Length: 196
Image 1 (cartoon, rainbow, N blue to C red):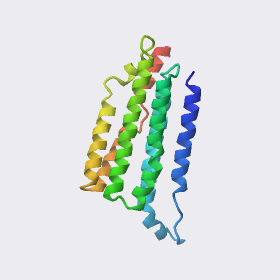
Image 2: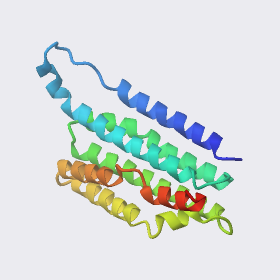
Image 3: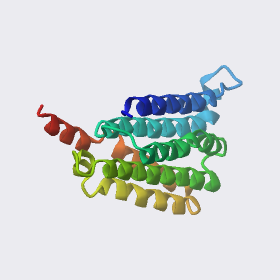
Image 4: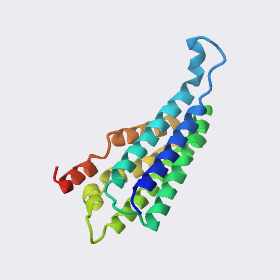
């Protein structure tokens, strides 16, 4: 099977995740700008989560361009990733509703960590499927220092959540910033492979 169906299914699930998150934003009772102030934690949680889901969607798209056909392992690894991403709306709502308290901040980080691990598993499944063929993804990610740094920052964020939840959110935000620009490593290798 080609990657088209996998990409279309993943895009649909990610679109639903974003839709669920935005539907959790409730309008304030009042009609003044001041009525929005208590909603700041909810809105900031939404923005951070929207950025994360967007980052995964963008990098997932680039990664699938290195894959010519989909194996059963890739399908299951992709579902594993989508499972963790689908929990982001729940964690986002809990985080915002509780004004960034320890438990929600730790759970949010744990879900981000598990999504990152699932992404690496999907990467490895794609690399495994490329053995003996074009080895684009392995070339592109190299030693994957961005991925390793991200995992360390999530772990540090989870730990910081029990000490100072806002520090954990800063670490999650910084990790998102690292990934905000799409993974150029994959773009470069795909372009050089295609000769353009």
